[in-house]
Amino acid sequence: MGRIGNVFQALLFGAALMVAPAAPAQILTFEELEGWAQDDHAAALSVFRGTCALLRDPLWTPPCRLAQQVGPGQAAARQFFELLFRPVLIGTPPALFTGYYEPELNGSLTRTPRYAYPLYRKPPEMTEGQMFHSREAIEGGILRGRGLELVWLDDPVEVYFLQVQGSGRIRLPDGRVMRVAYAGKNGHPYRSIGQELIRRGASMADVSAQDIKAWVRANPGPGRALLNSNPSFVFFRRLDDLPPESGPIGAMGRPITGLRSVAIDPAHVPLGAPVWIEKAGRDPMRRLMIAQDTGGAIKGAQRADIFFGTGLAAGEAAGRIKDGGRLIQLLPIDSAYALLPDG
View 1 (cartoon, rainbow, N blue to C red):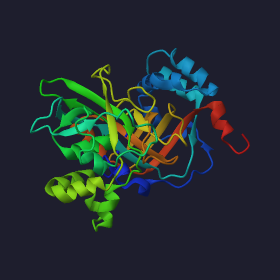
View 2 (view 1 turned 90 degrees about the vertical axis):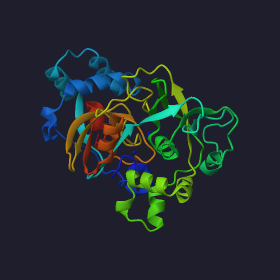
View 3 (view 1 turned 180 degrees about the vertical axis):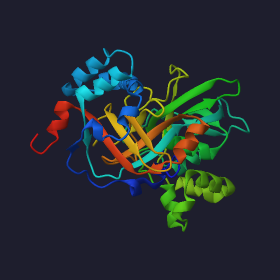
């Protein structure tokens, strides 16, 4: 899910945003977490409960079981985290924090002169890991006429960036809202269109998502070629049973929550773990979040993509984020001490 000086920067710049290899773990105290006492621990606990049962490591079983029994109120939630977890710093700050969101776009179930750009279902013959048709071939019409069109949008640029985000809401002409989510990709490697623009002579300041969108719309031919320079292509599925108040589905198969869910690298951070965010920058953030999502450009122990919610305001907020700071995992006590050299 799928997101940087603008909201899409992590995937626009790809490998350029990776962090250095992780350093040894360091166990901290809760007093060393800046702003810890002021956060809404009850809100974080509510989000943690939504996915903790999916954690299969037996060291997580007692905290997950006890999480369901914590009484209401901030004091009880804070005590839960402080008694059962230890803050662990893995890797070397500064971290890199970016943001992503769930777009809300206009679309139609039938093709019209306005709604002419499809989102595709995954072709039934395509298998996981298979090298399928490239973006250029698909955009050129190789799948047309097969009934794979899920919904039609009114802007090919938004189709591309919806694939970067991985999920979205499509508002239909009759007012209904369709939820769509990632269903698979064509097996081609992701190539950064931001890096491609830089290769063509653009400066780093000229490759925000907003700037790229404007340039592609103003230059339809070259713009289409720029988008097609990324051969990776994402297919979608319809989510009919997801309540409108729920966030999109994250990597754990459960809805994620604005400003409480974060995408991480599961090679370094357990999916489902609480993580303490100390984000620097123009809008500092000190907040307990839950690692419930992943992303193709999210690599390293000090790398995270913050989910900002749904719609335009969330997108604008996420688009301002490309900040340092530090990411601290909250791990069950035995798991935390097992990471030390003599653990």
